[in-house]
Length: 124
Image (cartoon, rainbow, N blue to C red; front, top):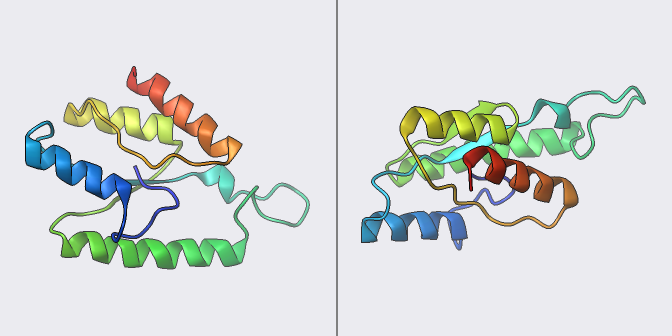
């Protein structure tokens, strides 16, 4: 599960996934990014969501495009889904039989809350 770490060099998530594939503890890897609509919604003040203004949104979409190309160069595909991470990840896990979520730990409170929600939804 990728969030702010949209690069392939020195990426813990990709390294960990590759190690799991190599040692046989994972049969496949699904690179995933969740676009959370509430981070883009207007809050009624004339400013956009909590942490995403139009410039950050443009940067994010450009970064996602570059990251998708990088993931393709590794022989995979980046799955970008709109929705709350805990719902999206639980759904992907249910449809694929996946049991593990690998993600970079974030420092912001909101991101840590999302991590807790994903753990709960994944049954971890």
